[in-house]
Length: 169
Image 1 (tube, helix red, strand yellow):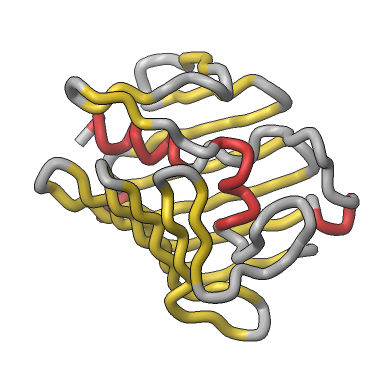
Image 2 (cartoon, rainbow, N blue to C red):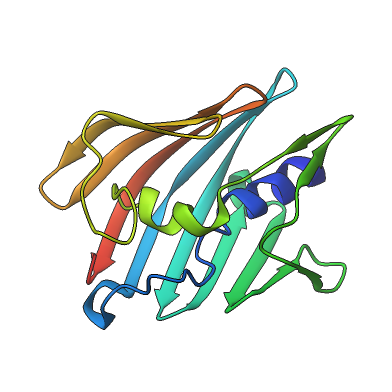
């Protein structure tokens, strides 16, 4: 379980500062939802609370019934992960080790994708986009943004169900 929580933390760490900084009106938002992760024959569902303020993020992931909490804070190029054993620092360009494989996560794009945008341009994802080995699909959306999304990679599959997305999105 701890491995999957850490993997999820890295998945949602896409709020790292990007070179093309969006206008301030696009940089203050909060998302709550459920994140399903399928990897190595196992599937886990976690609650996610993501608060974005400028280039600073605070992300909390919790297992079912409040079990197993992990906190992620991102500011500039620093990613801090705390799973209850003390905070650990990671850089935005580190590969994630999955068993004997490395997984390249698109850190700098994720904060856009989870809001249904292709990147800093603010263009909405229409159907699906591909980035490296990742395929990002908007399965269901409403006027405010995505309701259900899939993030697919040969090594891992993630689904995000957005329960609320507020702020300047």
